Image (cartoon, rainbow, N blue to C red):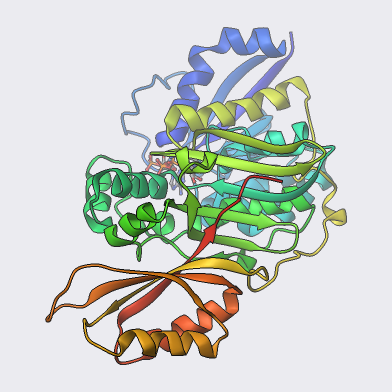
Length: 430
Ligand SMILES: NC(=O)c1ccc[n+]([C@@H]2O[C@H](COP(=O)([O-])OP(=O)(O)OC[C@H]3O[C@@H](n4cnc5c(N)ncnc54)[C@H](OP(=O)(O)O)[C@@H]3O)[C@@H](O)[C@H]2O)c1
């Protein structure tokens, strides 16, 4: 009977669950693949830590890169994380040693995916990273396999569960960002250092990978315009709601070159507006299939292991494929544009003192950039504290709106930064 020997580096949230499922369901993997899958060796920092699984029959390597050099391992599963350091060294060494690699590491793929895919091609092995994008949702399989015959025009994703959880809580309870973040950290939904999540970097890693697969282009993480959710206040959520919208952190990659991760207003009855809590979603607009929406859990031990194991089973059954759906040398340059070239409506919020003349000063700055105001909301009065002035703008280009925001933010009659968010009235229709 044929046999597949696995080496697993990283026994944290995802690694420990993956090891447990590999060992406890060995019979099922054998029925599905015709191969006996054996976890031969593992690596982590601390050999003695109790991980709730019995690893007594499994070798332990102090140095994860040693897994790449063992002659008795066929597949290396990298679940350490990080774009550099041991994760990168292990994956490079494993591919160069002719071993297949499965990883959940979005940072590594977003920064080095192309070189790694090339290395895999050169050595005739597989490199799979389904778990790197949207956790438990098989979004890359949908794109690479199910939609292989389609011409993709836009990918829109809710790609970070922590941000979606925070924005959903803010929407449903009226609480502010800091308050909800602190609670999410206490409950273990958000990292102690939440910056990768709330500043949009994690979602941008995933978006860069999706764009490369969707458009057959080289991964260019630096091309993604990123803004996170720290500046969103309970007031913004409330005003957006009054206008008929919800605020979501969306990753958008269009064939025309838009690569952005930013909070956006979307109509409350849009399908993506209903993706709440820690759920993720990825919508593909494609020809001839039209719109395909995938949704599910974007993180978690079992959810992420589900995607890791699917990749392992593909390797075991010989269901191969190229990591980016085509040979690396045929990937074109990233088609990104610096700013969204389309004219869109915008939501604008400024904190201003409650006194005469402010409104005309703001509209005059907007007019200088050819931007006109569609509607205005201001509630509450205070002689001491600034109040929120909210406007919606008639369709304008992103570069003009950003330039106007810079001038407004620098002016002496505005407190703090001016927030501008695109209003996406139709995001899923072809
Ligand atoms: N958590 C999720 O829900 C999720 C979802 C999607 C993708 N991912 C990705 O999955 C990967 C793993 O995430 P995670 O949440 O499981 O991380 P984690 O809980 O922090 O676990 C990381 C593991 O790597 C080990 N490690 C760190 N440095 C090492 C080194 N130098 N040598 C050997 N082992 C080392 C740690 O060992 P010790 O345990 O001994 O410290 C730990 O077991 C990351 O790429 C992440 O982006 C995670």
